Image (cartoon, rainbow, N blue to C red; front, side, top):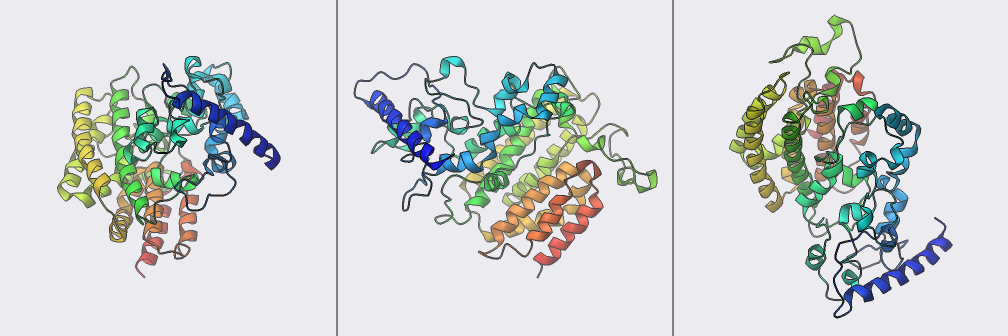
Length: 438
């Protein structure tokens, strides 16, 4: 966006915000009947969140909109609905077009109902209010002296300072809910499978908020541990919902690449060498990738809770991997695991993790690679994201580069997921482990 245009645009929007502030914050003004979405333009003024450079000394960078529009993939989430793959997907799924299909817009935009769209609202991808909530009730007041974050939350702002709520907000699209989701039908039509890690994705987004590491150097560790646990907990809710739903097996809950993999000679097949545990050959196992990393977080907090979670998840995996699972047994094990995770989340939120905690978790996951790797590409990918995040948390400033190449090589193995080979993954992780030991 040209700077001259941005400057004029910012002035116009700032004037609009001032008008809204007067209307909303004026004494005796009637509160809006509904919390309306105002659109990302209402945040774009240079005096608000559209500054080119961070404002020195302030709690808020004021470059949040600029970072989002220029660097964040969320800003272009709606644009991809018009690319050739999305056009083809819409045709396969029997949709007139992806770019205006509610099924797609639910996650690729701020798909606000007409009644909740303010006069300034324009849908521009996954913009501010997708994460921060409809802004009409707090947009003006939150800039006034003495106004608190708690007041904004009361007025409808999503509390993204709360790590649990932040993770759940992300997972609403990056994992799905009962109302918006990616299922096997959509994946078969061409939609990518859903993979997520709160801390890894936040770092890559990139962050448009001021890091709190000066006051809390290991804040990313808390983000990692809470993210791991909430992700697993939410995935259990999704599994319980789907297993008791009208369509099972819902293959998006199972190991995709148990079926979608490159065929090799029988004597070269690591899958056939490994065997099929408690399931019949040809029936894919439950995707337990999220558990394989989160279990180490639980075990590091409380060894008994880690053992109990392993028992619940093992029983759940065995039951859900059957062609016709007992839904009552699935519900029992989900409830058991969820109770353990509720307690683990509370511990993670209150904890003060440090470098030693990050180092222990990293070594635990690295040491577990021979169990994780044969569980499939998704399990290895989740573990790789966790290992890199934990390594970066343990490395001192300027020391993160020695293993950068090793992690790049590790992630290259996921470029062609159907050709994933656990033996290669284990070999590369062993190289990383050897470097950690020095």
